[in-house]
Length: 128
Picture 1: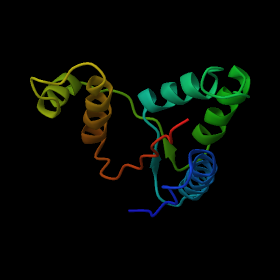
Picture 2: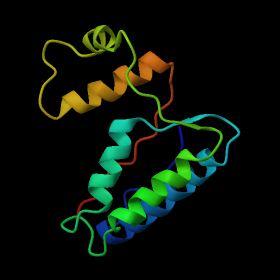
Picture 3: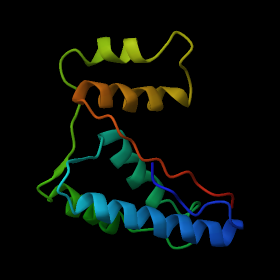
Picture 4: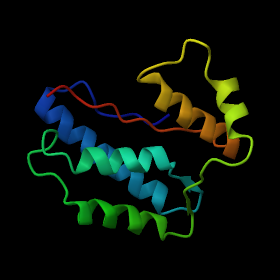
């Protein structure tokens, strides 16, 4: 697991977190290992990075789409989608109590299972 410089003040912690995440993504995108970008995560990036209530200077939709296009064009980047049998894997991943905000997490976990992805990197937001 990567170490990260979180635990700073909200402002400096956010800047350090962003730098850490950009560095990690750059290293993973450079290869040679496969990098899986799951579609729910890509859509989340588009939603959050363009949202004016989250960022003072958000990406334009064109900038955000360009960032994703640049990643998807790399030879080691994959964006797998649900395949036949996904529902059974989702049901085996999510329990009977999975609801609300946990549904997208279970969706991502089931996609990972379906495609044999075993490592996930999570960058948690700092307080505003």
